[in-house]
Amino acid sequence: MLKQIKSQLALIEQVETELQPLFKQIEQTALYNQGRVLNAFRKLHIDETCFTESTGYGYNDLGREKLDSLYAEVFGGEAGLVRPQFVSGTHAIACALYGILKPGDRLVSLTGRPYDTLQKVLGIAEIKPFGSLPDLNIEYAEADFTEGIEEKLLDKLLAEKTTVALIQRSRGYAHRRALLCEDIEKLVAAVKKRQPETIIFVDNCYGEFVQEQEPCHVGADLIAGSLTKNPGAGIAPGGGYVVGRADLVEKAAWRLTAPGLGADIGAMGIYKRQYYQGLFLAPHQVGQALKGMVLAAALFARTGFYVDPKPHEKRGDIVQAIRLGDAKLLQSFCEAVQAASPIDSYVTPQAAPMVGYKDEVIMAAGTFIQGASSEFTADAPIRPPYEVYMQGGLTYEHQKLALAEILARLEREGAIKSQA
Image (cartoon, rainbow, N blue to C red; front, side, top):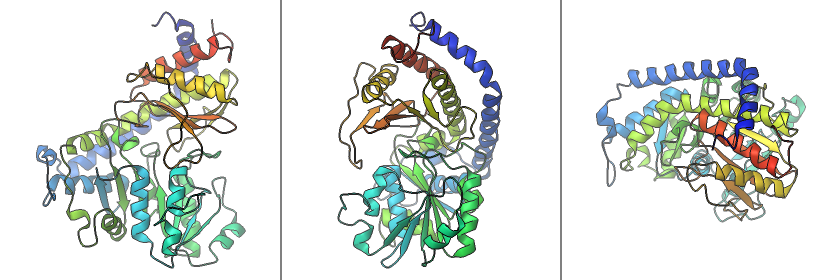
């Protein structure tokens, strides 16, 4: 295998030398975050009894309660809710929204149009499912402040009483940058200055452990995300989390189970060890993913593609966008990612309709956990400008090999010049 990609690996080694200062910064962030997580484990006296299986109603599950507290400690909230019953990050976000909003309330997005799968929840997609927010008489408005705060536009957006301000940290499939915690802090301050009672809710997917702080550390009232992304480190088999103000987390728990039951019920099965271990490994795994995405940005920029973010830009998530400009090239790129995967490497990914998405989507994900974007994956909606979104990576070594194979495939097809 290494013989076939020898020239590509030589190019990678050359580029790596130039990226060492960036890699050092990533490693320092990972070290800081690893210390933060380790201190939380110590503070809460996590022990082997926390991994004991719970069944049935899951009453009196100390391991579940400590896991909730552990997430709260790590992510800077008063309380946490970590459950396998969250089927995705979108589900965790939806439970939080349905919990903290009531009829007559108003929700605004500060980062423009949210990610595709959330649009039906908000009732802003072409199809408005029964039970979406408009059915509950909840008003929605949006504006995009990802490139900076326009005071007059924010004044106009918040001219009416607003219950919740939503911030999507990652780019999703939008042509915008991911937000840094510094950006979130400025948005929080700007909103609270105008409406102190407004709840700041952050979709934290893809952003965990990318920086030394999390949104709750800079003033967010509530955050939510998926355990098949950063905090699960490729170990968690599924699930999601909500962290923040105790009263708001409790309301999210009521929507997940039932009012009055909340977080005090829900069997965790055999998965608690994976959740604990995943969180412990997450700072390192996120560091590995970030190094791989920086390398990808440098490689594809060098071979003539538009990349976002650029190699030396500060990153708010683990996602790398590469503009391919052609549907056939997008297909070929995803085929190469799939072929370089440990699972289902012989499968050819095909664009297809997917629940929650307007356009057909192609997904290359040869992962140990189905669809886990903490692992090395690539996906894209089939629409101009035909950008592919890569993310994740359990090990940097796998990312290097996979990127070399992708370059080799694109060379054979004439999409880039030979690196020999």
